[in-house]
Amino acid sequence: MESRLNYAKAAPGAYQAMAGLGKYLGQCGLELSLLELVRLRASQMNGCAFCIDMHTKDARAEGETEQRLYMLSAWRESPFYSERERAALEWTEVVTDIARAHVPDYVYQKARAQFSEEELVNLTLAVVAINGWNRLAISFRSEPGKYQPKKHE
Image (cartoon, rainbow, N blue to C red):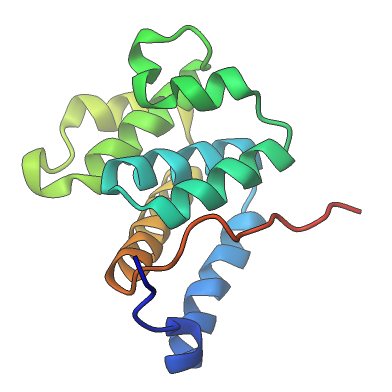
């Protein structure tokens, strides 16, 4: 599959706005490992090959285990995730697939038990952001496989 266009070049201001949200999220206080799980899970749901490739690599670079990455699509049946991560993953799924059931009260209550109000807003913005990136990458056929995570100093 060939890339349709480079959206960062075509609309640099829009790209910078999205990147700015990502920068904020990286400094908002949520665990980077949690954010990568959220990004990867939403990307799996949306079928975004470019973002799955990127966030799998980023998660590994942050120290995530292969086992947890392999089991992410079956997190409910897997013992490898904390209650906080489980709440975040369920929140990610309902916000990503919001048209099906909106956000049920029981999912909100689970999330609020694990996250402060500010953290839940930031978690929701993380889901919003990755869903936006997924839609850009899928629409313009960003090519998976070439992404390399940044080196940590």
